[in-house]
Figure 1 (tube, rainbow, N blue to C red):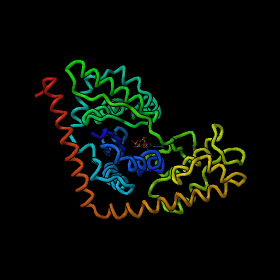
Figure 2 (cartoon, rainbow, N blue to C red; figure 1 turned 60 degrees about the vertical axis):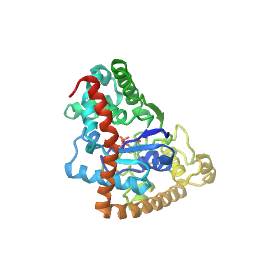
Figure 3 (cartoon, helix red, strand yellow; figure 1 turned 135 degrees about the vertical axis):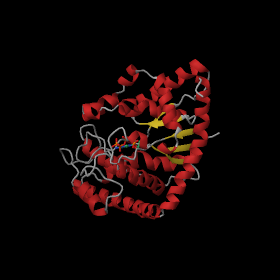
Figure 4 (cartoon, rainbow, N blue to C red; figure 1 turned 135 degrees about the horizontal axis):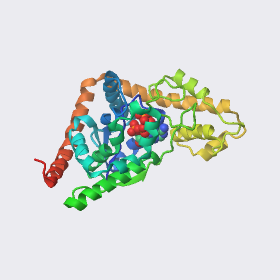
Length: 327
Ligand code: AQP
């Protein structure tokens, strides 16, 4: 039997070059090696206030971007999290198997709540890792590929699953976190910060919908480091980031690119990178336009994904309810 893998994406904006290079491109490449589940996690997105119309649009657009990149709905289960009610239901149940202390130790909550201030410190934001545990435990997932910032959440879901199994007998598969292979792509203006889709209209974020002109502008204005050599190193975070993007899209190694651009200035390097990204995104945008123009087909694809996900999730939820005495 193929291993089950789950990777979610929040519809919190237009996906970025970071989401593409660091996640979606690999999801599409690897989907045939495992049984893959790709929820569009809109219930997670509302832990930060969203505009309702934008959230609905972004949810469908995110599905269309995933399909444009090559997620194959006949092979993988692509669905919208809120359409499978078992996620919310198991999330509530699991709240009773995680403690306030455990959730309080989650560094992502501490970071986000510090940034958002008291108004933004919603109970849902605090509880986010428990819903994430439900997302995964519903499907007997073997592997959850995560970046460093989510590893703690997978450790927590393992603890929740083990605690539940110890109390009631084996119900949940305990998932293994695997490190996402791709490097983090950083903001082109602030290379100490991750490129994020929820940073709207940001000159340092390349969105998948950016036109070739906008891509050229953003890359030509990307900050660089002192000195003019094009090499990846800890004291050159900006150039390292550009090299990482270049390597991921061109399928060349960073070492090969460093050799190609030895003795050449930032100008030639940036303009080659801009062309490469502009062409890559134009190709994706052409596919995205066709997919999103046929809204009925897109909705039917998501309905099918919902049904396939719910068939598994409802069964797991029924087992959980029976174990704990919920009618
Ligand atoms: N900058 C990035 N570089 C590499 N990978 C990235 N991912 C996100 N940003 C980068 C990966 O994309 C997948 C989907 O991410 P997500 O939507 O679940 O949440 P996120 O990590 O919080 O992504 P964003 O774009 O930063 O969203 P917002 O702005 O809403 O917080 C994940 O596999 C993630 O690792």
